[in-house]
Amino acid sequence: MTHKILRSAVGAIGFAAALAACDSSSTQPTGDVNNPPKVTISVPGVNAANRITFGTPINITVTATDDIALLSVLAIATRDTAGIIAGGSGRITVTVIGADTTFHAAVGQFTKTFNVALDGARSGDTIRVAASAMDGNGASAFDSLKFVMYDSVPPVVRLIAPLRGATLKSQVVTDSIKLTATDSSGLTQVGYDVLSVVGGALVTRWTVQTTLSVRPTNLTQGFIADFDTLSPASRCAVTRSLAPPTRSCSTTRSSSSTRR
Image (cartoon, rainbow, N blue to C red):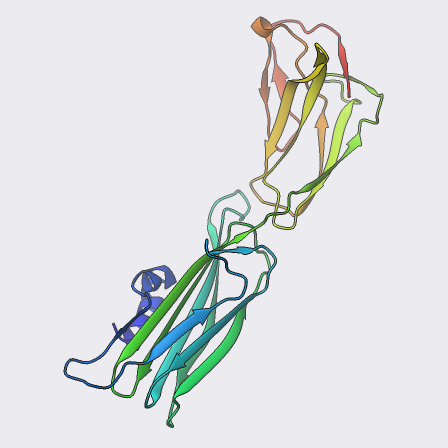
């Protein structure tokens, strides 16, 4: 596979197909005795598990060498983010051409550093890098790297309402639960638990969760207080969405409250 084939593959069927054909390898014309070029990719911060801490600058260095002279060097990087378009479907792919150089003089070594922007990035994004080099005799070399951005810092959540000691009545509009949450790589779910003391231990009585299709980095979310006050045989079904949860019951709910 030559440099020109790699370039046309990127344009025709996308970077993923080109990357699948690339590895750390080299080729040279049959019968040619010259040494093929060498090309390497390095990204500071990528660990042995091919992960990088979210928020670390993605600085990519491509180095190509040849014992006589290089003819051309190509380096391409992509950042692929899934499921952050409104509605939670689709992908966003950022493509960066870090190097696309043809030499017209004898150059035995070439180094280029470029970066992939983190605007809109989220934890779990995949970065793919591919590079190729060709010498004047048609011999070529390839290298590729794939790694994932990983967020090790948990989100921060704060309960705004109710205040300590307040009494809540389930499904009473004025009795709301409100929280704020932030996370640098995006939130995927918010919610709350209602706890009771049973036998001297805290027990979760009721849980409400909302899944966020669009992953915001900060959020203020309100809920109408909603928790289990009926016997297991007559519990009501709860519909949970981005709107306040709704409850449909076949039995009459008795008036009761819980305390946070």
